[in-house]
Length: 150
Image 1: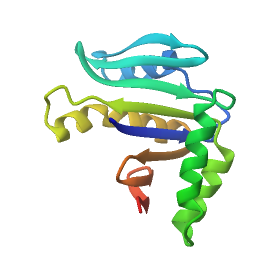
Image 2: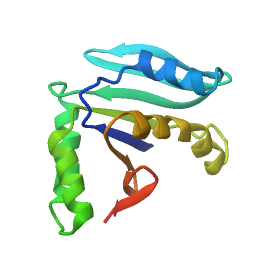
Image 3: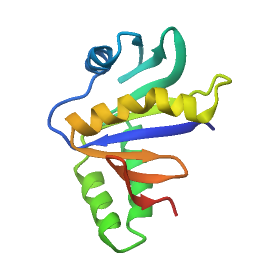
């Protein structure tokens, strides 16, 4: 099983791979997304200067995986009290799509890879309402960890 990071969007503005590529290229023209299709899901590869950094999947209500992920995360968020748990429950209840990225290390150091994909998460948190979830870390609002993985 790989390492995944997900942006759970509650925003009314849709997120597509075409939009992500256009926005990332404005940050640095060396970013590219090679789009693919897997049934109803939008999928693609995140590249920087021709190097592979991750595999995207955008999940939406009705595709099966969206509901599974929301249910799984909700189980953890319902297990506790406090502001972080409340915020995560609210976002999960209002989620409209999940931008999932399986991070691919490709022999690179962890920090070098995470630094290269960081603009993606900044872009999403700056332009779309929602939260970032990182495997084994927890939920982030911007750069603030609001609910650690338990």
